[in-house]
Length: 343
Image (cartoon, rainbow, N blue to C red; front, side, top):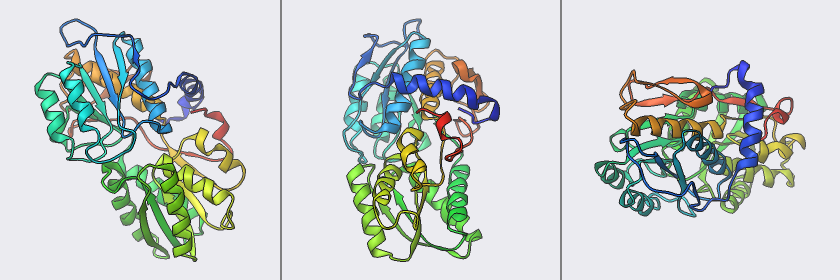
């Protein structure tokens, strides 16, 4: 999804359908069937998120399911209950043994699943990473939700505005090994150099677990009584932090921004706990990843720079030199626009 002005109205309609179409995570199959290769059969696509029961991946994988339905493939979602570096390995192995055409994976760790992915590729399964990448040697294509630089910058810009460009801040991340989280945090630290009056005093990890993220928010406020802001670049973390702040004495005193979905954050924006946050449309991210997988399976692209393919309603995309495809720029949600979005 590319957050261009001309698509905002369309995004609202698309997101509504995504929210209505979400299914419970747990390996359900939409279309039954047999695995397929590029030899004219149906493309079978298995989505492997970081963990099941995560609202962000519920939405992105629903987008993938919609795309697979459009190109008449078969869809499945599998994954661990908790995000950890090697928890995805058994699911990769099973998919490869079943002869799945393509795996679409959000990696919990850049290296821990590489051997399993390369074994799957050797068996003929195409590997597309999305949301969080592996080492490039372990996949055929990466579908990037937005540039790491853009994601980092929007979060730093928003917290700087909210705290008057001065004061102590902390970061509440997901897993300590998460590829995307660490890339964004490193870039945020660089961006903060342009804000000399803002001091990053702590980085903590909620492991994309709601209760742990809630508890880490509480601990941050106790440990740093002068804290003025929190950045949480994870949808689970920002929602848990907002829930804590909304009923605490820190509401209205400690700013919170990061990456979240409108449905998770709506009540906290409307009650004044959160002023703004950012994201892309995760439904479109999953949708694009599924079409990229289908293009690889059918031999329309190989994943090399300059390859072009069409991703349904999103239009044409070109593969970059680093074997990645860019969805678009992050979008900032506020009380003035949040009701336009229903995902």
